[in-house]
Image 1 (tube, rainbow, N blue to C red):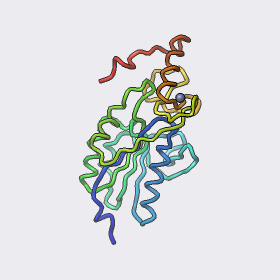
Image 2 (cartoon, rainbow, N blue to C red):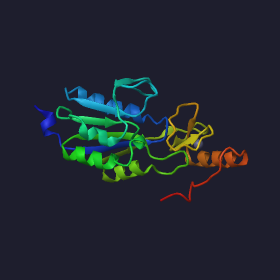
Image 3 (cartoon, protein in one colour):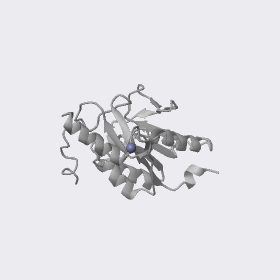
Image 4 (cartoon, rainbow, N blue to C red):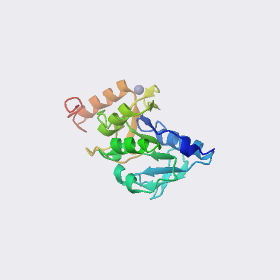
Amino acid sequence: MDVSAKARGRIETICGPMYAGKSEELVRRLTRWTYSKQNVLLCTKDTRHGPGNLVTHAGRAMTSCYLDSADELLSRDLSTVTVIGIDEGQFCGDTLVQVCLDLAALHKIVIVSGLDMDYLERPFENMSLLMGVAESVTKLTAVCMICGDPATRSHRTIRSTDRYLEGDKESYEALCRPCFLDRREDSIHQSLGPLEGRRADLP
Ligand code: ZN
């Protein structure tokens, strides 16, 4: 059976904080499609493990192509591809939503993983909009690195105000909401970073 011809287009999102296993879940879903001999394309802007290779925190690797912004996908020949996975969707720019809608209209299954919020718990606009139009929204949690409750926030542990800072264990910790707020208060007292914009900049 030609599944690719029968597959209806749809959009799935996988979001949550750092260390929630988002990329792991994306790779798991794509791998599942390959078992039925369907072509998948994994795209990422993450270059921490070199171009062309996505490695999850759990150490699982999958061949990927580099994507600077989402609209680059529309110029590719996707005629043989059934499923398109996009990792780190928050890095893919404002065109992410329209590109995913266009791909779904072309009967592609689009699965996007990414952070739902930045380090000041402000929603990433493109991921928020994508969740609004997606058929499926999966919110994963990490384990709070202070109290062990489900973690929904990514707290930055180094000095930087770059919203799109790529990072790993040295620069982020996953926290639950109460522990996140406590950490932010501590940061103010230690002058490590103001609370600027955490509430006021919300759209
Ligand atoms: Zn906690």
